[in-house]
Length: 236
Ligand SMILES: *Cc1c(COP(=O)(O)O)cnc(C)c1O
Image (cartoon, rainbow, N blue to C red; front, side, top):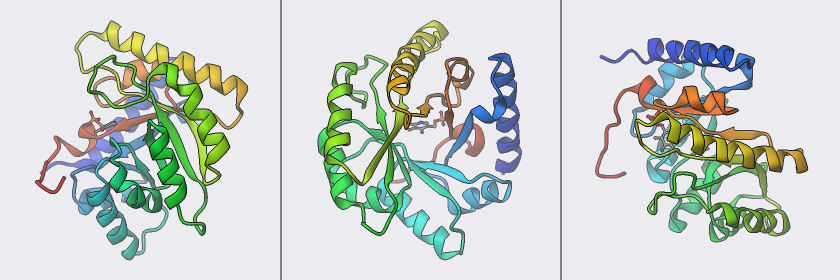
């Protein structure tokens, strides 16, 4: 049996160590526990160990788990959507999540804004930028960022832009990952200087969290190091 509580505590310690190495305070980097494909029991174990921010990637699976966890009386979890967004899933995402990391195009911004219920607070969004230069990867191109930001500011009163998210190339080559994080870090700093609302740089996963923290990550998204290898079901 996998001990998610032990894994979780080890990750907190790692974040602290990498922060120290980067001359940053440990509380400047938050942990997003990525529970996609994992059962509710695993989420509850990590919740009981103190974690309050969880990330999910599949809208239908996530909405089901979020509803059930709320029905158990647990209402102080902040839910982050981090997966690619299909337009027929925007309503589920708009109304079950607090933060969306994977906003990458105008059409999705428009739909999230239209479908977010008036009774809910603004939906926090990060723009996912394609930093890995891989054709099939999600994320908007760097030259489209300005346009997407002005669309959100002008047309999306129910969205609140908080920053940027990136996924580095899946490679063993640390220099490539480092340079891709550097690109997004510079973009983040540029917009942070002109917009005081911009405060989140979501970079870093299980295999590259050290480089992400070195490059200024404010939130690392860690899945397998806490919950073990993913379990894919046909419903995903
Ligand atoms: C699944 C996923 C993660 C977590 O990845 P691990 O390598 O398991 O830590 C982080 N970010 C995104 C966008 C993901 O889809």
